[in-house]
Image 1 (cartoon, rainbow, N blue to C red):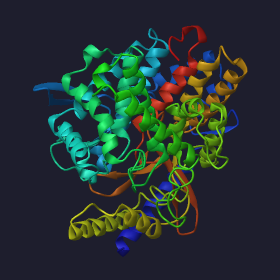
Image 2: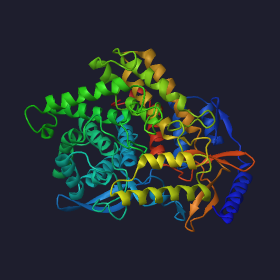
Image 3: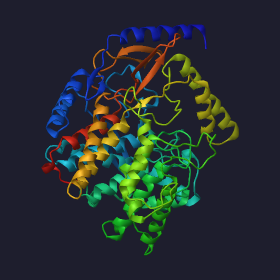
Image 4: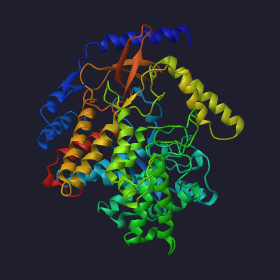
Length: 553
């Protein structure tokens, strides 16, 4: 690291810390809030009426805005189809700020989660959330177009034919804005859970009447028919995936959860005749049922750990991980209880509530006591201390160049394990980044569980609602306020101190530490994160809606 860069970083840290001294956090509901106005409203209570007041304020200030971008068109079934996308962050708000790949790539997973949130709000109250319904349908149709181009379907077919392949041979779930057809290599970790989330969302939308089968093009149906043979070809449920964090590939419980829930939905909707076009033979539901059973038993064995199949000193070994929230979001406790699958070390069947408790006991310790956000997992080096400085970014670039050169020399994929090990060893140790979207995921899940149980078990419904409101408040506490500052990357490739836009949901809170050991926690440069905004919007909407207005929980 050059002396000039060291001096630049020292100046950056001094400026950032000096400007941030003016910001004062506020107390509300026993939590430290970044935004004083939000804190005052939360302090007033958590009833639907009170939460509607919070929702109104956040809507007026743009905190719940979800920028939908007209991204052009792609060819599907021989015709140009218009696509609208939700980018990872608001790339139009300040064009001088660079967000790395976030400024130039479309992430299917983030888009799908936003579409799901909009659908959920509409199905909760079709009158109040009519606009959200329109957005949700538009985003679902666009995602289907993007995953069903000729190049994408060819990738599905190739994997089904040859079996598991390299990262770039999988369907592309991160697309360059200038290659939405996915015709070129994208050099990304495509072995994830994204197209599976899209397939689940589409089936859920069809099952609940949000969209109709007449809206599916021939290519869309072909994509959905690929799901079962594709997962069988790659070795479900025990193949290795980079998962939602897009890092090292491992056998991940969180990915198994999404895929098992998806296969279960395929079996049910095929068996009841709703989606007969998915079947490829008379024994289709039997074959899918066998896959579901294998997924459930594998998940039951692994709970509550994310990737326990490796040596304890392996970079792939992981116990708690924030993505284990997918077990709850995709209804695995109910599926495991119904199938009477032995769970964890006790190796005994559990009720759905017991499974939830085991999962939450692993998840909740990941909450950061300072910010209220969630760390992704212990020892996470991504956006750790001083990550957004010249010194650390120079180290990260050197690591990437090293593993690329190694991959080219070997003629294979980059060694993601080595990349992860090097980043953990060579970047500063200390506080992990504290992320916001898991708070909204937990709040929305518990809100839905409250609605499901309000008639059968009113006391449990109240417990779910209290849990949901508590995590909603923690997420509201992360909404940015006045006089907050952070460092952003500008077009000159330099980090500059900028005032954080107020009333926005940050991706995460990150830590800076100067030479004297003084620490400062600020919103990440990627503020807002649209995925987090969508999670806040749906959790708040579900909890702010009176019981009589709910149509479909």
